[in-house]
Image (cartoon, rainbow, N blue to C red; front, side, top):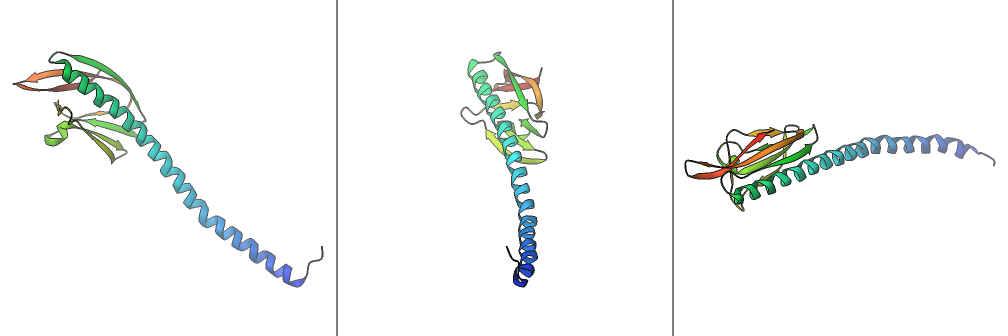
Amino acid sequence: MKMNRKAMIGFPLRLTIAFLILSISIPVLSGMVTSLEDDNTSMAAESEAEKVSEAISKVYYSGVGGCVTVEVDIDRECYIKLGGEGADAYTIGIYHGDKETGRIYLQRPSVCIFGDSLEVSGNCTILIECQDQNGKYGVGVSLV
């Protein structure tokens, strides 16, 4: 194959454009992969929070004195926050780092989580116990 002057000038230009396109697209693709990994981690934490929510409903329906333990395995980058003050006492928050990625409302039945909020992360066991505090029914949660 014979190279002429036009091909010798055009080849470096094509090569430069190809590398320019690659240099622009690699950071975008890298960001998409990181975002996908974060979403996957948050969804796993949400799945564990739903498991705790179901256990809370079962214990609440079992009546005062009923209790159950739930094994959870939440990635170290995430945590779930059970209960809190005011309206937060009826919710389970899902967090990735310091950012809230979701919230489960305990509304069917509307169950109050007594005490201070409990942050759960890693592989651990949660004890959920139905309680009566001055005529108000709800659940207490603690780590075992």
